[in-house]
Length: 294
Length: 281
Image (cartoon, rainbow over all chains, first blue to last red; front, side):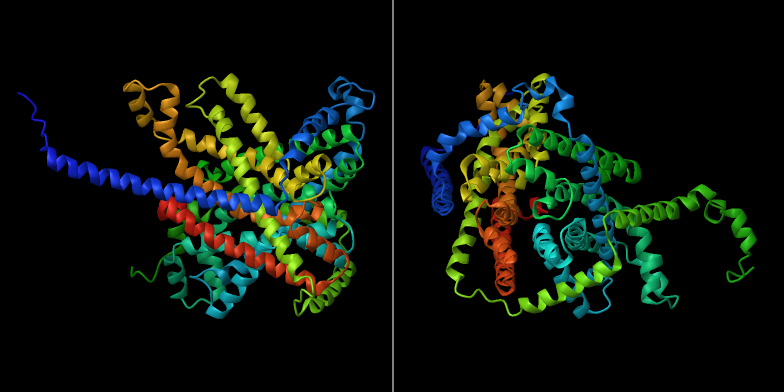
C-alpha cells in the first residue's frame, strides 16, 4: 500500500509559508528588541558602576598573582611544602571556627524557636485574626529582607563588639526566613485533624498542639537544618563588622596582606562549610527520608 | 457493647503499637530537644551572653529605634539615589558576567555532554570551592586587586555567582530531554549542532529564569558588599551607622527595602513571561 502524502496546491502553500515566516519574524523582532533593551540596561549599568575595562586588564594579572601569593609562604616556598608553617595558627583558628559554628547554632535555634512561636499567626489557615496575620507577616518580611549583616552592624553598636551581636543578627534574620517557610508548611497541612479536635471543644492552643504540630515537625526540622547550613556561611563573615567568629581573623589577614594566612583561613572555612553541608544533608536524609534532601 | 463503652484494656491489647511504645521511641524526641537546648545554653555562656548585657543592649536598641524616627535623608538624597543606582548596576552587571562565563563551563560539568568523570570531577570541585567562599570575601579580594569602588563589587558578584551558575546550569543541562539531541544526531548533526539545536532551546528558558532570580537576590548581596568598601548603597549605610546618623540609616534601610521589593516584582513578572507561570513555582 502506498502512503498518501498530501501535497497542498501551490497557492495554499504560499499562504501558509507567508504566515509561518511572519510568525517567525515577529518572534525574532521581539527577541531582538529584548536583547536591545538588555544591552542598553547593561551599558547604563556599566556607566553607573564605573566599570573600567582598562583597570581590569591592567590588574587582572594581579588577581591571578594574588592566588599565587596567598599560596606562597614568607620563605618563598609553596604552602603545601611546609604545612606546619602554613597552618601555624591552627589552634587559634580552630577556636574561632568553633565560635563561628556556635554562633550559627545558637542563632539558628533562637530563630527557629521564635519562628515556631510566630508562624501559626502568619499562616492563612490557623491565624486567629486577620489583623494579627497581617502584622506578623510584615514583621517577618522586615526581618527577612534586611540583610543579616546590616542587623549585625546596628547590634554591634547597641550590644557592643563580640559574638552576641552576631548571634542576635543571625537569629532575627533566621526568624524572618524560617517564619515564612514554616507558615507555608502549616498552610499545606491537612485541616481535618484540626476540625476533629475543635469539635471536641478544644481551645486554639490545643488545636495547634495536637492537630497541626504533629503534621509539621519533620518539615520544620528539615528547614531548620538547611538554615543552619546557610547560617554557617553567614556567621563566617559576621566578623567583618566585629560581630565575632572567624571573619575577624580573615579580614585582618586580608587587609594586612598576611598572604599565606588568607589561604589557610579560607581553607579552614571551605572545609568546614563542606563538612557541615554533607553532615546536614546526611542528617536530613536519615531523619526525613530521601525526598527531604533537596 | 455500645460504642460509648469501650474497654480501655481491650483497646490496649488490640493496639500495642499505640499504647505501649518502647521506651526508646518515647524518649528519643525529648532527649533530642533537651540535648539541643543544653548546647544552646552552653553556647550562650560561651559567647558571653548575660542578662544584664542583653537588657542594656535592648535599652540601647530602643533608643536607636526612637532616634530613627522619622526617616530623613537630610541633604544627601541625590547621593543616596546615585548609590542605589550603583547597587542595581552592580547586581545586573555582576550576574550577567557570571552567566556569560558560567555557560561554557557548565557544559563541561554536565554528565550528558562530558561523559568522562575524570574531566568532570575537577570542574565540579573547582565550582564548589568558588561557591564555598562568601561574596563578601570575594569583594575583599577584588578590592585588593582593582581598588575600592563599585567595580570591585561587580567582579565579586560575578565570581561568586559563577560558581553557583556553573552548578545550576549543569543541572539544568543534565535534566534536559535527550530525545531531541538524539534526533539531531540521527539527522547527521555534529556535536555542536546537537548542543545548539537539541539542548539550548530546552535549557535557555530555565537558565533565563535562574539568571533573573539571581539578579533579584544579588540586589540584596550588592547592598551588603558595600559594607566592606565595594561601592553602592551599603557603603553609605555602613558609614551612616558608624557616625550614628540614625535618621539617615533608617531612610537608607527603607530605600533598600523598596528597591528590593520593586526588583522582586519586575523580575517575577519577567520570569512568568519567559517560562510560564507553572515552571516558576
